[in-house]
Image (cartoon, rainbow, N blue to C red; front, side, top):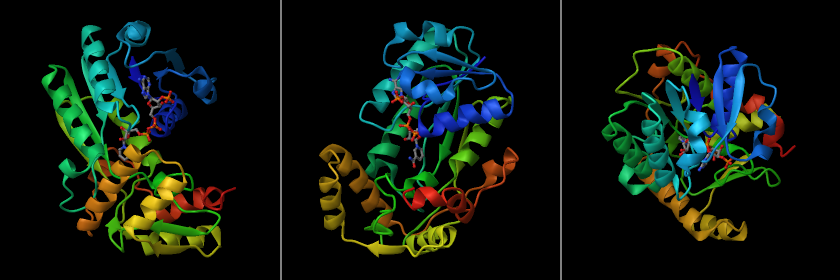
Amino acid sequence: MILVTGATGLSGSAIVQEFARQGAPVRALFRSPDKARPLHGLANVELVEGDMLRPASLTKALHGVDRVLMISSAEKRMVETQCAFIDAAKAAGVPHIVKLSGKESGVGFDPAKFQGTREHVEIERYLEASGLAWTHLRPSQFMHRYLPGALTGVDASRRELRLPIGDIRLAPVDIEDIAKVAVALMRSDGHEGRAYDMTGPQALTMTEVVEHISKATETAFRYVNVSLEDKLREFKEMGVPDAFAQIIEEQLVERSRHPESHVRTEVHDTFGVRPTPFAEFARRHAKAFLGQ
Ligand SMILES: NC(=O)c1ccc[n+]([C@@H]2O[C@H](COP(=O)([O-])OP(=O)(O)OC[C@H]3O[C@@H](n4cnc5c(N)ncnc54)[C@H](OP(=O)(O)O)[C@@H]3O)[C@@H](O)[C@H]2O)c1
């Protein structure tokens, strides 16, 4: 049996839906019955409630599991959550954990300078030392991060992408690609002790990102290279908690130091997945970019 945690989240729900689309049986862990509602009725998907921070709540979820795809939120308890889950999975006799990790595409980006990747590195090390078989799947920035509502996304009402990162290049990846790769990886053998880094197929400047959004929506969007101070002020006005704004600030500053990005689509090739270009993502989400 395959277990996917974080099944109600952005990446987890796409992955569970991809299992269902392929007709492959999967168990999906959720902690909020309300958020799990959209997953009801998916073919071959067994929904099980549990909290990764409470090992006693995971007995049913971990029973008879051969491989776990471990996902949880990028928030202040991510290390504690995933390390507690690794311990619980080990105690339950699960042989193999695949960690949905993360890796910046920026050439020279220092993971020690951004809390998100720093924490993924810490969890990867904990998993590697656990004695369990491990695999790390490390996507770059999700293309979803440009949608309205994301902290680094467009402002749909102003038709602007407002970021303090000049015209650096990033190579974002489509979550649908991650889902297809994750399902192929989980359903095949021979990935123990491997780390798979993946990005989207193009390294794009923010001006190019906005050109794709404008074309897809047939509406003029523009990139505004705001100062870091202005961006932090906007976060405050939006009510973003200081600790979270600080994490995003770290990421934006470190990204600015490294204007070029790798394009890594070998993992797409390995698993037979066509890399989705940003233009196609923008067409698929045209209404969302317009705030509809
Ligand atoms: N955003 C990016 O650009 C990017 C790029 C590369 C890698 N990543 C990494 O990808 C991972 C997943 O990101 P995402 O955007 O898909 O996350 P997300 O939308 O926040 O979803 C996280 C999921 O984990 C669940 N969860 C959190 N704590 C839990 C707990 N204690 N017990 C059970 N379930 C728990 C959440 O449940 P609830 O719904 O109940 O909260 C939710 O289903 C993160 O580690 C992130 O760092 C992100």
